[in-house]
Image (cartoon, rainbow, N blue to C red):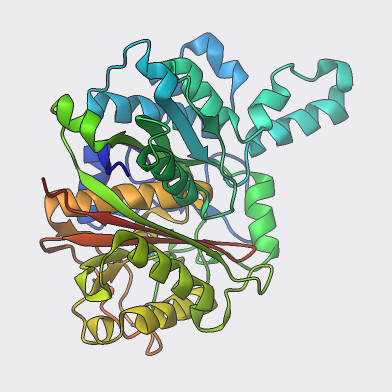
Length: 414
């Protein structure tokens, strides 16, 4: 089977746009959470989110084409363009047939959906844009990226709630290692800071309500956490077969070595007791990678800042890693403390964080972790970044419906 490596990264996040800019912001513990500006939220109980700041889609997309796409697709195109440039990826016409694109999206084009409904109600069906459906459907992130870059291999969207981006990477990994593709542009994208997005999660009592101090609202594993913070953005990774990457002398951030996926089969929104489904996902990824639990140096936790979820993830990590975690030899952090929860894009952005931790030897912190929950007693790298040589990292992504995904990324060795 082919080995699969990461040769390019592109990031559009609430803390910054760009790989280097996002990474430095995360290491500095910078929060991207702020009052909502994308719509009038004065009637809402939650009035803050992790918005992408000063976004200008024309940096990456021809202005006349923007009418075809929703904000989440713009993010995907931006992240993909940056990742391809970062990888210095050039494809021959023949290679384009074996270069594909999987981009996970959790909810799709809410901006377009809400705007279309308003047009329908106010002006009638004859005034609906012919681009309404292409703007709404989730697979158009992968579709537009494929068209923009001439990727003629497999192109589709993984939709598995907050695991979407991670599942997309895992499936892209599978296509390459089975020899069915040589290059995959993969990741996740999401843009749900809209009235329906915020209102829907608010109605579920899933969101933090710290309106007076938004930068302190996302506090994974802290005793005072009261829900997650909705975010938006995109993360795109360039995956290549090792043989192709070596042949062209590509820079390699890390190797993907393991992929695990499971279902809680338990509850609409709550994780299985003791994180049982997450345990199976992590164990599957470790087995797939051929890596012992005590070889993992860093976990980028799902760590959403919800009262139940953080405890279940802690229990799952403890069950899988045992003394390695309990004795705090395993370092864990939640970068959602700074970016909020990017939903379908979260697993992709956080996989990129794992790749950078391996490449750079630095671990971003969990900010706002000032009063650790006694039920979350592991080393969650509170407040300040640290240095560490990372051999193997694991990324966790879990979603509504009980869907779980874990990825193992490893330092590339020869």
